[in-house]
Image (cartoon, rainbow over all chains, first blue to last red; front, side, top):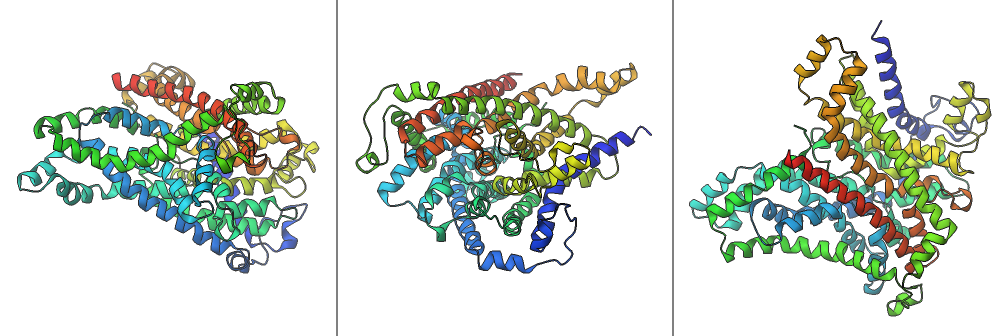
Length: 271
Length: 320
């Protein structure tokens, strides 16, 4: 008896959270006639799986998917590689301005990207990087590096210093102790922060909208946004593209599970 | 006492390097390695974050337009752009939108997120499933979520109006959400809360699970009602976590861009533009780079104030 409000609340929260996603999936499979109905049809009577093929092959969705993978993937690899070195140094050494560096890294994550975008646009315009993959990837390092340093530092600090010291006693150099002893142990941390970096770059919209001025180089969020902005919006295509765009992130969230909240209080998963 | 890593990490961080430095005797060559390791990150962050911030501040004192981009910068105009930001009706409205909408979004997200955390902290059948369902909105990219909700808020075929009419609110038949400021913001609020409450819920839940059981049991034995236990025991113990989350949430909601850009694309007179969106449009739709920079700087200063508060909170927790 006393349990029923609990279940009512649980059902409400579950429906509010998951129904929009279910609705995307359903709508993406509907025929056009079933989408524009006064009374919403809760099930596609004749599922149109071909729509996914249409979106991927004809409407530029497939190219955008590849562009997104390329840009987010490269920005992640570069960002994590550079950040791993700094994360290690910050966790292990006392050096001049160390504390200022850490605070600066934390503070940069709070910046609204709109504060950075105008100068970045001007510089890219003059240096010919506008509309190139390289330009967008470099711009993404502005947030992947600080985030990765912040997360990695925490992971490296959990690795006992004694292991490195043992390697040093055995005649290893500082640098090789870092590469051979610490980095392998920090692999879970590297994987976690690579995942966070990738999701952030994958989700990013404002830079992609501004710097990629050619249709052939647009990433998924930009293509999706142009679908919605059209006069006669093809809602089925919007839904199918949204599914394609969201699925990789859901997969990565499943991988992250335990680290979702832990890696996150630094403000990680939002633009 | 809390499970927030930022705090744990900082507390640990201040000890580890000192011990290391003591044992390894920090000679110059050691410093050299540290500096070499930090240098690539420092240079890139400097070039991609510090330099743009400084340049944006500088641009905000100029009248830089599209033509000026070719040879550098426009003319120095002093505080003229800032005067315009605070006197121009549309720009002032964008600032008001940012602060008012941001604050409402923070309050609603925090209250709903905490409520869901309390729910997930109960034992009931299907809890594991609910946990998975709650994560889903968080995993959806903002542009995808905004596109999808825009369809659900469609006046004729949208699911939201259909449900509201079925619930007896006849006035929502063919109701248009994006022709007026208040309904448009209501729709944006739903989308923003939908996307950001899961993080709050899971962070508060993590906090709830570290609370000392005996204190809550003692309150129960003493006959405190569920509300009293929440109000006088749980909430005070959670205060540090909730404070940090509120600041993070404020930072997110004040710089909101994606949802407004997609959802409110058709709102007349851009009445729902927030500061980030207005600054962006000034720069990239009207080529008023100077004025856009000034608005961006004002937003930046507001966020900086919030960030300083955040650092102070973190440090306060470190001390205890």
